[in-house]
Length: 118
Image (cartoon, rainbow, N blue to C red):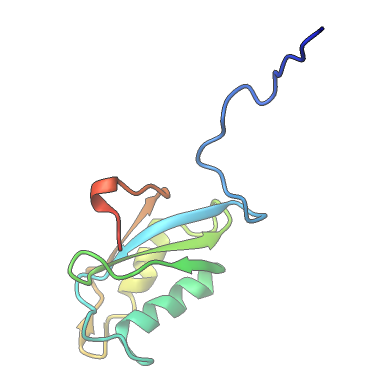
């Protein structure tokens, strides 16, 4: 009996999205916003700035002593990290929190077992 050879795909895909569109990930380091999480706070002002640049698909929890948060947005080049960083820094001081030294770093969806968030 003849067998069937499978040739496609040639390899298992990695770093792909299955939600209809590619997704871009980046992490915002607010430096310190854990006391400014209200509707008029620094965290919400940052979320609005991100939403003005692209469609937010997911927002991760606050990490690293409540200073960092990872976002997912639709598209692979929707957000330019340096441009978003400048926009967040331009917010200045919001609710007594200075966002002037916030950073934005492009990232991928990858979680080390030792760094898994529960």
